[in-house]
Image (cartoon, rainbow, N blue to C red; front, side, top):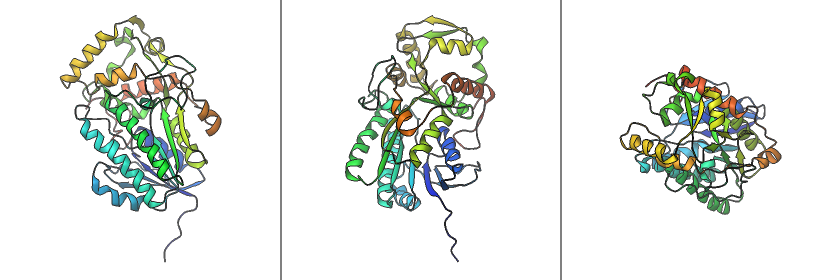
Length: 347
């Protein structure tokens, strides 16, 4: 005898084992309107969350299209978070996962008849813009910073979704454009992605940071990952469409970073830092590329009014709290029981 499916909505989440994915599946699984959550990832996690099932799929592979359609069939919504940051020296590899893999998810959702698609875009999709508040709204151009693969890929997918929405008007498409997302248990993963696996997390101690460089353009927005997950939950369960900017209420700059690290602010020419970063990246000493550095210094400040008014969303954490959680996690080697978030101080 076939058992009846659990009551409530069925949600599928790609990239469910990463920084955002783990928070999103937790937020969805705890909502009484959600009956089941299916998390998709390249590697099955040891993590256990009540109400969440897991399946493995590699979106970079063309043969994943068929299994994807089967996995999405019957879902009330798909939340697409899967993203590959490295190798920064080989953008063809990241393009295969991030762009071609995303297109496979979009097409599978259409073929499977999924009524809602919530896509993880980014502040990195935006063209360079003003650094001062109140910031840019969701109508700001999304052409990215073309030299940075991350921004180029996010911007390209914005164009893909423009066409997708015209071809599939029956599908409710939501694009989330958050600032930088941090939480304590994502710290080890983010240290590996941007600083490298052999940089000890214990080095991020206040006594080892006597000053913070004040660079031209160093103004950016952050958000606690759990607050971003709450916005995703609201977008899944409400009848909303379009793009939403997501960020904490304050803008982070060198002064705020110095306060967190109990350090001084020292004005440093941007060219000096970029030259040093470029040399380290070319030598494969650090994974973060100088092109991403260029992009960060040009990202606009976001106006999140639409998320507040349409989604009814407000962040529960300040920017300082999100950054403090991240720094605490780096020092402690915090993580979760998934391959991307494995907690280690080094390695």
